[in-house]
Amino acid sequence: MKIKVINPNTTASMTATIAAAARAVAAPGTEIVPVTSRSGAVSIEGHYDEAMSIVGLVDALNEDPVADAYVIACFGDPGLLAAREIAEGPVLGIAEAAMHAASFVATGFSVVTTLERTRIIAEHLVRNYGMEHHCRRVRATDIPVLELERPESNSRKLILEECERAITEDGSGAIVLGCAGMADLNAWLEDKLGVPVIDGVTAAVKFAEALVSLGLRTSKRGDLAYPLHKPYKGALAAYAPPDRNPAPKRKLG
Image 1: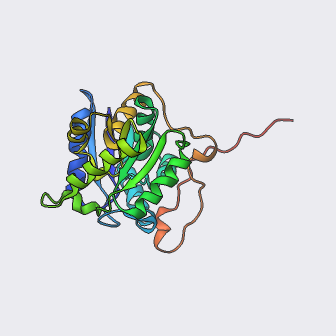
Image 2: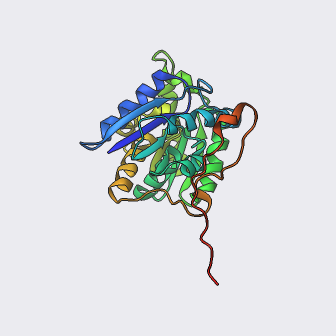
Image 3: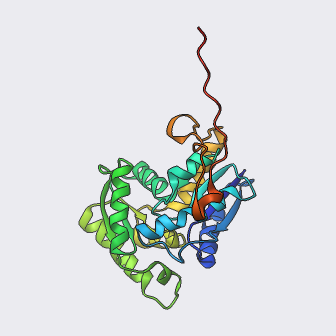
């Protein structure tokens, strides 16, 4: 089984952290193919960053090797439904995967993320994924994403303190880490906190393995059918969708 794990930002060192976490939980026989986006922002910390990341995400999905499943390793799940339109294998976003995993092991969870502006984006995802009854609160640490990679930063301490507040103030039984750059923190935090701490990268990899093992693929009926074939203009002309949808069957008589 081959799972392509795509970092939609352009920071290769973060991809390495993500890949290490994915490989640590992958089953024997599962190959993790990490990909760093070739275009876009060095970190994704807002709606504009997310929108600009989708072209690089599409490139990563389309380039070889073809995989059995795909993971979008950014907690905003940018371009998730668009990716499902163009991919045959399952595509998982780490926010959706992490929230579902947390709902399996606790009656309530809190999300601990980076900046205040990304807290608001995560709240939108909670509503979009129908998780309002499970998610007690989304909390921001106001740590820029790239600070997570600096050993001399105070990020680990700040994240731990915010997780502790989530447990005591929100009454949460689990913590969801709200950034792919936190993929190397879940075991350390879980040991300190004594509650399940869910990293979306690893959760998405395990869900992807399960879906592939079940023989499930992305539905190509309705809104997740391949994109409609039509010309694109300007800088996106090369991204015009090929004609891959079958012609509708005509009724006889």
